[in-house]
Image (cartoon, rainbow, N blue to C red):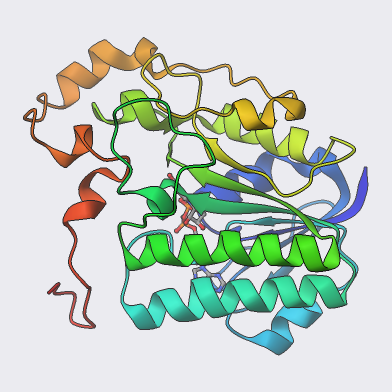
Amino acid sequence: MMKRLLITGAAGALGGECRRRCGHLAEIIRVSDIADLGPAGPNEEVVQCDLSDAAAMMELTKGCDGILHFGGKAYEGTWDVVRTSNIEGMYNLYEAARQNGIKRIFFASSIHAVGYSPVTGPVDSQMEICPDSLYGVSKAFGEALARMYYHKFGIESVCVRIASALPQPMNHRNLATWFSYDDLVSLVERVFTVPVLGCPIMYGVSGNDRKWADNSDVDFLGWKPKDNAEEHRSRIADLEDMPPSDSPDFHYIGGPFVTFGIMKDDGSQS
Ligand SMILES: NC(=O)c1ccc[n+]([C@@H]2O[C@H](COP(=O)([O-])OP(=O)(O)OC[C@H]3O[C@@H](n4cnc5c(N)ncnc54)[C@H](O)[C@@H]3O)[C@@H](O)[C@H]2O)c1
């Protein structure tokens, strides 16, 4: 068991889920976010701060053994927002982790790092980087940074290219991309249990019949997803009409992100 596990983005959906369910992994869980986190629970420390503040990251990571890194912009945004939260923030976190002797990090990457990959067959971690958005570029940067800190300084990371982490699959695309919260938590448990992690890249996807994700590179984790979006197929048919066959949902891993322009401060795209 770790002494102290840091969860960034703990006010968000996935960080919040792990805040609720990963308390058994460490004696103390330190939860952090730029947003309000509410009061500290039992065995919790609460630190509200901004990933783009290097000094705050140095303080935040002191005394921690591992990090669950969920903080940052979780969708396409302006360059300013993506750069400060996901690029500068990622550097600040890893550099602080290095200086504070942290050895293992779970990095919430995204399938949007390879969003232009065609959905024609299994996709493994060797897929060439082909981001579909500034957000995807920031996740590709994060994976590269994690690898640099592994090779140069021995900090182990798993870069999990999360697809669609949701309580339930919500549309036809999710029949391939759903990543259940139970499967997320069981993956986190494995990442912080295996004796040797290295710095693998993998896909955060449940055991869906229609999944394109090939995680055979990380068989050594001993992680077996239990959920399958197919069990929700009839509910999804009630929720959403089948998209047209030329929809990007069925042609690219990144789905609708391939249609996005560059986002401006006023919310427009060009
Ligand atoms: N949910 C998914 O399906 C999915 C898919 C792919 C990748 N991911 C990644 O997983 C992580 C968590 O996703 P989520 O769905 O929980 O998103 P979320 O938006 O609910 O949570 C992200 C949290 O990060 C915080 N944050 C943003 N900028 C910050 C900053 N500069 N400093 C400190 N905190 C900051 C936000 O306040 C928020 O609470 C993100 O990194 C996201 O890119 C999620």
